[in-house]
Amino acid sequence: MQLLILLVVIVGIVALGQLAKVYELSSRLSGRREEDISHADTRLNANLWLVFMVGFFASVIYLFVVYGDYAPPPASVHGVQLDWLMSFNIWIITAVFFLVNTLLFVFAWKYAYDKDRKATFFPHDNRLELIWTVIPSIVLAVIIIYGLQTWNDMTGEASAEALKVELYSKQFDWTARYPGKDGEFGQSNYNLITPMNPMGIITGEGVEDAMADIEKQIATLRGDLAMEKGLLLVERARLVANMAEDDHGHGGHGHGDHADHGDDGHGDHGDDAHADHDHGDHADHGHESDGLTAAAEARIAEIDHILEHNAEGLLIMTDAQVEAKQDKLKRLMRHRQRISEISSFTFESGLSSFDTGRDDQVVKGEFHLPVGEEVEFVFRSRDVIHSAFMPHFRAQMNTVPGVPTRFKMTPTITTDSMRTILDDPEFSYILLCNKVCGAAHFNMKMEIIIESREEYDAWLEQQDAFLVDEVTPSEPENEPMPSADVDTEGGEMAMIH
Ligand SMILES: [Cu+2]
View 1 (cartoon, rainbow, N blue to C red):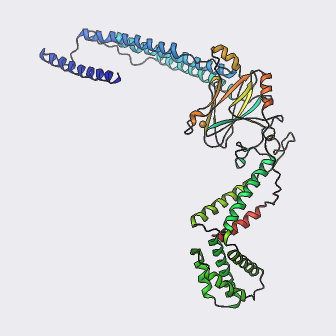
View 2 (cartoon, rainbow, N blue to C red):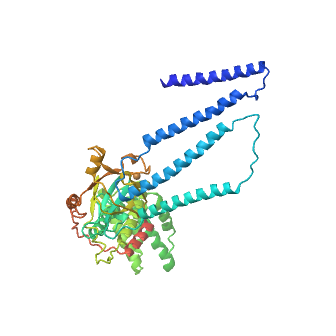
């Protein structure tokens, strides 16, 4: 069918081209020049302008009638205001549109070429200039002032008793949070994000929990690295080389071959023959009472012990595997450092920041709001910029990682009433992501239910407080975590390399 239409269009274009050629030939035969246009031709074209104008206006009016209304009606206080502002602008634009286009088409029709008419010379008129400068200025000023007023109303401060709800976006879903009985949102920190705590809410338990988890991972990695045969050999060779250097300094013993071994140690993982050989050598040189040397000797003995007696516990990894584990260890230690920097503070209300999050209510899938009450939304994002769009409330705000944004509104129509108004029992309000944020963007939505205060209270009552389900960690992993420890680790890391 489409192919057929396409064919008709192509054939039509070809036919027009042929007609034009025929016309050209015939006018050449009759001795007329191409640019000579008869009076009848001019009138036909002039009248066609009027026909086009009528067709154009008719199609615009048709579009207005069919698509002109936002449906459904606004369901928030500022939504009514916003729609008024939009309509106000549309009416002005529409009036100007019809005025300007009527002048354009009618003038073209009226002043079509007439060889008997002479054009009027009309270079300038002050009154006209004044009129078409002043009137648009006034109209634009009115539009801007009215717009600014509406904008300020919409984006101004919420009242103190406004309900607070946080909307948290991530690829690809929304989470809503209510502040709980204390009316205060718990602080959050992305370092605490776990499957149990997707918003990274800070609580004393959360910090301990995350710390314990990191400690466990660090311990496992360290255990692995401590049993890697190649690393043990490298460490041993280095200790031996260091002692040899010490010997140079103090007693002037020439141990040229030791230095060589130190260098070899980097490359060959499997070859422990010379290491063992050196060991014996050094133990004999026990003339150093230096604590450092004693420690080094103890470590060498320890390594030898591991190598000899722990064959089944030893790991042999490729360099890439070792590097990956070392990188992960570094990352974990940075993470641990950041968690250890999360500290508690006290709010004006006297609440500790480690406690305000405990009673927060975190909900997914749908969230409820009481009708007729002001809500202050706070928006946060975990990963990329999303946009919280609630079309029925005429509300939209970007959610930006690292920058909390806000928006206040007062819903005016309950979900049930809207179902009646629209005669659609399936209708529901919706929160959508309105920024194309990735593969599952289309699926990023949450239902909003507007109901009476009583129904809302009953619903909120059923929502669990954040920490209610969580198993309180009782493992007494109370190793102190001073940052000095991290420095030591840094040293060790350097040595392993
Ligand atoms: Cu999104």
